[in-house]
Image (cartoon, rainbow, N blue to C red; front, side, top):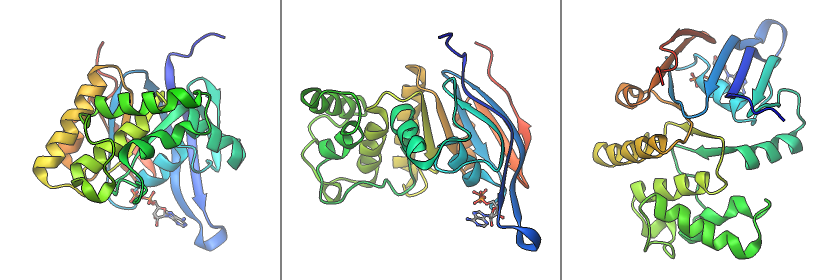
Length: 233
Ligand code: ADP
């Protein structure tokens, strides 16, 4: 198979919620190409379609029309089970409120995405420990989320997102629940992961977060109104 140079190749994405008079056109023809290794921030006013786009790109939702290839595979018409497999194999997710299992240790949280994948059981713990070390949490493996600070919990969530070695990391307001100092630490970690080759696409309201990315996309009324484009290699 010829490897696609694009992690994301989306054309004319539309998403309509509801029908008839109450239909909401949340995405109105979004085109997006993302190359491997890019770091992209999507910004725009509340209601402009950022979450809808992230849900479609994250295979949590299907576009009403348009085409979407993720890592070289057409994923725009998959059923929910197939989308779940694609999410597990190809994507990592980071959320504003971490989404960790409360009574589960850091290393067990990070192992979770491996349970249904191809990694042999005896390798899962080793991979999870390595992912925690990558985010600076060596020594905290046995702590449960309540025994960790907000910033450390987000690091666990980032390790969980990385443990499957995803083609794309998607993040929804990853620093939205953190104070400014902790937020800076998480942004520095994302910078470092990007420098090591990770492809990142995040959604944010925060101009400081947006400014860290290499490429900024602004949306309004379901459309891309500005795209600073891929930085020259
Ligand atoms: P943002 O993330 O930029 O705030 P959203 O993608 O959440 O924007 O929403 C885009 C538009 O779609 C808004 O008008 C919102 O009210 C509408 N919308 C989002 N989700 C739904 C839904 N499940 N049902 C109906 N309308 C929705």
